Amino acid sequence: MNKHKEAKIVYEYPKWIMASYGSRELFSQWISAAFGFTVFFYYEVVVGLDVTLAAAAFIIYSIWNSINDPFTGYLMEHFIFPWEKKTGFRRMPFIIGGGILWLVSYLAIFLGPTGLDPVADKWPIFAWYVVSICIYDFFCTLFDVNAASLFPEKFRGLNDRRMAQSFGTIFGVIGVVLSAVIPPMFITTGVAATYRNAALVTVVIGLLFLLLLLPGTFETKAVRGLYKRRREMAAGEKLPGFFKTAKTVLTNKRFVSKITLYLGYQVGVVMLQMSAFYIVTYILDAPANNISYLLGSMLVGALISVPIWMIVSQRMNNNRSISIFSGFFMFFTFIPMIFVEGLAGWIISLVAFGIALGGQWFMDPPTMGDVLDDVAVKTGRRDPGVYIGYQSFIFKLGQTSIAAVIAIVHTTTGFVSGAPSLEQLMALSPTPELALFGIRIHSAMVPAAAVLIATIIFWRFYDLTPDKVTANKARLEELGI
Image 1 (tube, rainbow, N blue to C red):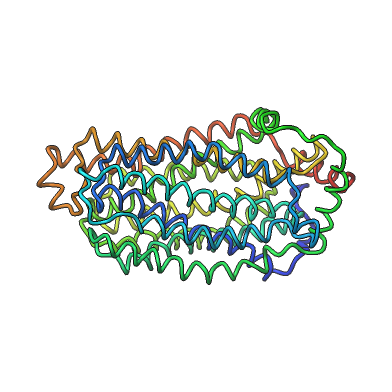
Image 2 (image 1 turned 135 degrees about the vertical axis):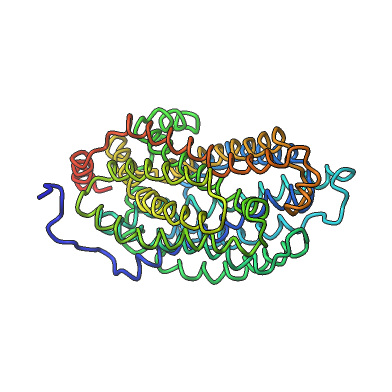
């Protein structure tokens, strides 16, 4: 028997609370997947903005992220807010307020100038695009840093973390699929006003999803007591500055290798998401709502996989090994996407991809929890928001590469902006067959390379074994943090 296996599975919280916390992934993916599926395609293909300007907007957005995400995370851990002193609640106000404003800012992306000439009026279109997605990211970060930071603070045991994330994996994939099924019902490809209607639907349903996560993200008396002890321990202590903190974070080998894996699989997944409308419109030559078949297949794969990943994680009790295996598995699932032609081939490929995604999604928060525990043992304090902020920063910085890859591929393969159908692309592109292969490059080939490289780096440098994880938990009990 594995000596790390726990004899009896005991949970601190009831499963409905863990399910409620897991539904934060439903809310997050409902919005962020809709953003990934729609926004770049909307501005390049529907509005007709030149692809270089569309990519430049994402690059500016990523530069903004390089300031916004780590600085927001730093403030969350180094500033005591008035309501916390009075009520003890720290993260809930940001989770609720940030979530609502995140939804509103998503709608604002599609409220910009429409009906303008994408050549003569390219700068007003570009300006709205840049400003709106930067505001969107600010509220995204405000919500995500606080919701994610609560995970290691509220769920302290391995069993609670795994169960909460098993719900999170299921709900997250459901959120991705629902965002690919419901909003496109209101979209007519090429008609800008219908994308606005779909965004409004995203906001209304998103508010309902936000209500589901409130019980799970509620800061209990025990969590508020933890905050109070941390405030008392930090009283009079000179806290490290922003740049010193950045140096500490980015020189932590275990954290850097962890976020490298996160970056690789997220870049792969998001690049596939951003390519989904291109796949449906140009490779499959189908209406926008056909995207639901592709994402439904991914959902099936992920739902099948979650119980398996849960059982394997409890028996192995080795987050490192499972993360490595699921990383290599995801790499292999991208390979068929380079060649498949019809809808059936894409469905089969995405079922396999969903199984791999389930593993990565399931393992990410528990592995991050191990890293944050390790940091707390070394420093004697918990600063989860700082590290979550940097993880978010690294990923969003990677989004620069996503936009750049799509822009380079479309420019070099003859893809034509403002051609919203396969027929128009074939008529307008000087090299239509090459343009179609370019879609496969940014849908499968580049994502596969990103996942493979990231997994190898994680395998080489991440060394938090089960023995070290167990020792860290014992030490945290002694420290009372």
